[in-house]
Length: 169
Image (tube, rainbow, N blue to C red):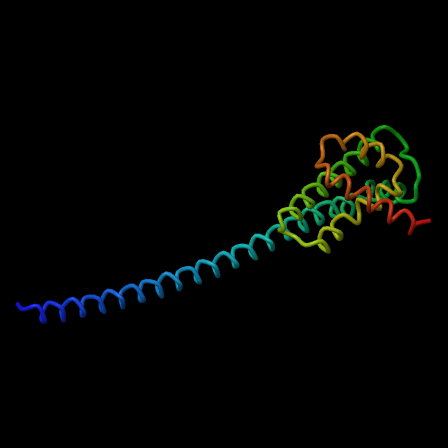
């Protein structure tokens, strides 16, 4: 083979190599796009699941009120700022308040991880804010649990209480 022939083969190989690189880059770009779309779908699925779980827990707490007439009466009395009749009632309402506080803490953590938005967080926290404003045993329980809770959650709830307490007066 002469030098001219070798140069022609080298040029053809260089063109084929260039085309292969371009095709590889196109393939990688398509893979990245598909991966990004899958990640976005997974993120939306996680957000939806997180919010559905919060709603399911709210439903479970509301079911307790709906299905147990005795507890429904206690709950109503507590929202009317009456005192529990006995230690059993006090323990029931404190346990319910504790569930609400922990539920709010979980919602706040999901908000921090951007699994739910601020509107969803505020929606979930509204009952807790009302309990803390109206139910006499709620504030002492809140104060007991604060050291074990996410400090940013505590600050957020305290801020909401300050804003909300002005509305209730």
